[in-house]
Image (cartoon, rainbow, N blue to C red; front, side, top):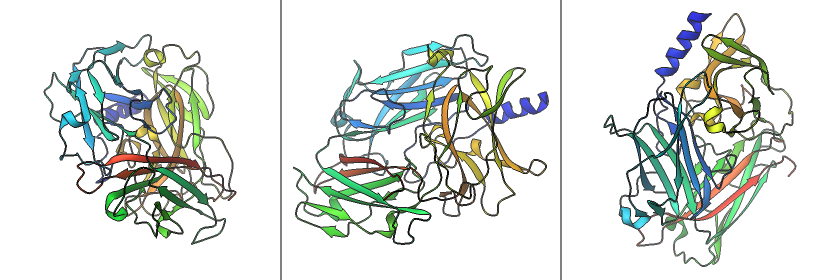
Length: 419
C-alpha cells in the first residue's frame, strides 16, 4: 500500500497541464507545484468570473512548499475568443504598472502537506483595469526566469450596455422532455449603435461554464431595428446531463458528505468517495454545477489551515466503449485534464482516479471524451431533461473601426426541467 501511495504522489508531481484549446478560458495550474488556483469576483466563489468593470477580483493559489518564491503577475487583455488583443496598447486597458511581484503570501500552518498561499487582489494600488472585456492574469516564476507561466487566471469585466433575455426549454427541436435542453436568447442594443450585427457582435453560450461545448458566434436568425434574436436554433441544443455529484471534506478525521471513509496512510490523508453508477432515472439534488469552495469545519484561516488529501473517485460500471473517462469540475482547470483521467480496474469493475485536493466542498461529474474533444455524459451519468443546469450568455461588441471586443451584455439563467 505504501508503495502505491508513493507512486500516486510521484504521478501527481509529473502531471502536465491540459492542452489549451483554440477557444479556451481556463483558470488553471500549469505546474505540478501549483495547486488550487481560484478566480473569485466580489467574494463569491460559486459565481462565474464575470463582474462589472471596477469589481473586486481575487486570484489565489498554493505553492507546495514553505520556501518563498518570487512570483510576478502580468495582465493581458483578450479578444472574445481569448486570443491576445494585439490591436490595443497596454495603456489602453491598464492604468499603473504591469509585471509586479505578488507580495501577499503566507505559509500554511499545521498541515501535513506544506504550502505557501499567494493572493492577488484587483484593482490595487499598482493596477486599475480600464476596459470591459476579457482579462488573463499569468503568474511567472521570476527567480527561475521562466518564459512560460506557472498558472493562469481568467475573468471578464462587464459594461452592461445591451440587455440580454434568455429562456431554456426541454421541448427541443430534437426531442420533447427527454435528453436535451434548448436555449433561446435575444439582445437589445440599448444605447449602442449596431450597423452590421453579424460582423460586430460576438456571442458565447455555455452550459455550466464548460468551454469544451460552448456555442460561439452563432449568427442570429431574427434581426430587428432594436436588436437580434436566436430562436429554435439546433446549435443551441445541449445534452441535459445529470445533477453533479458532491462531497465535503471539512475534517480530516471525519467522513463528511459523499465520503465513504477518511484514512491516514503515512504521510498523507486519503478520502475515498462513495462509488457512483450511471443513472437510469433522474434524481434531483442541489449542487454547484462543478464549482467548489475551500472550507474547513470552523472556517477559520482556511487559506492557510486547510489541508490536502488524496481523493479517490470511483465510477462503478462495466468498461465503456469509446473514449477515456475523466472526473470533471470547475476545480480542475478545464476538460480534459490528464491528471483526472480515470483508469479501469477489472477486479473492482470500476473506473478510478486519485486527485490531491484541498479541504472544502466540491461538485463533480464523470465525462467521456468524444472524438470531437467534447465531454459526454450519456454513458457515464445519463442525460435527463429535468437536470438543473446553469447557462451563461456573453455578448461582445466591436463596432466598425474599433480595436477590441467590449463585453456589453451578460445573462445567467437556470434550467429547471419544467418548461
